[in-house]
Length: 338
Ligand code: UFG
Image 1 (cartoon, rainbow, N blue to C red):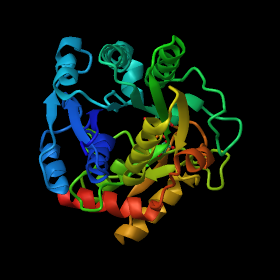
Image 2 (cartoon, rainbow, N blue to C red):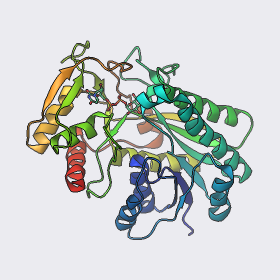
Image 3 (cartoon, rainbow, N blue to C red):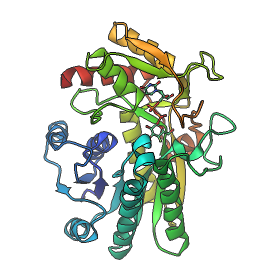
Image 4 (tube, protein in one colour):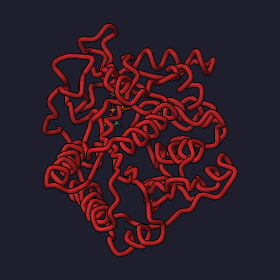
């Protein structure tokens, strides 16, 4: 039987690359579309090593419709997973138009091409940032999406709405919107992982770079929140578990007879504080980490973690890896990078 072809935009990125490997191992034929604006071409070789075969890839900017259409014409895809987007919250505050152009513009192009080429199934990368600070934790999918505090977050709210609007307009579009919590970790082989450019914004790459001696010290952004130890709480999910959620989403949407749009949280259902992450890392790496407490970072929510019931019940997906596993794999990746 012919393997279903899935276009993976941003397929050389952190979550994209892990998902391409899982797709390959699950009987799909992934085709990568990436402009390498925030990823490295050598990742394609790593993906090929892990898959045991070369994965088709196109160096294309998804906002360029003529270029992107070539992929649809050549590959005749059965579905699309759309990762390609800018994701730095702080940068989006300083350069909002860059985010609106890329994140929203690429989705407009993609939805047009899917319509034109009769491609029904889409899995879209959204974020728990759409909840802002929820009134209750764990947060369920029915909690209201808020106007985000950053242009980046706002692009996720707008993109979700765009997909709903196109679906409602009578198009055949069927989509799963995955709201990621905090993806961390790396492939257990140490061949794939996060490659932040410049100074990392996110906690775990900052920790591993500090432990590797590339940064002198981690600053914990505030310890005066109303949480058990005063530091913020997040739901950290291993990137391999997250990648597998895309396979479950794709299988589910492919089987659904009616065109539909469904949203799912993708987290672990557990919250961990920044200090818990630091302490777990120290255990896993068997070394102490230089850190100090600094002021709060503007825009941070105090605490959020996911209810994962809906994904478990409908997609039959649940994470299997722990915070410890994720930090061990992130540290292994960092050491191999050196
Ligand atoms: N943190 C530090 N020091 C650092 C970096 C982070 O203390 O050097 C803290 C943050 O203040 C926060 C926690 O670690 O309390 C996690 O911060 P991250 O930057 O790793 O993650 P965020 O939760 O801020 O952001 C992540 C994604 C965003 C997404 C958001 C949704 O990076 O893309 O989750 O909540 F929008």
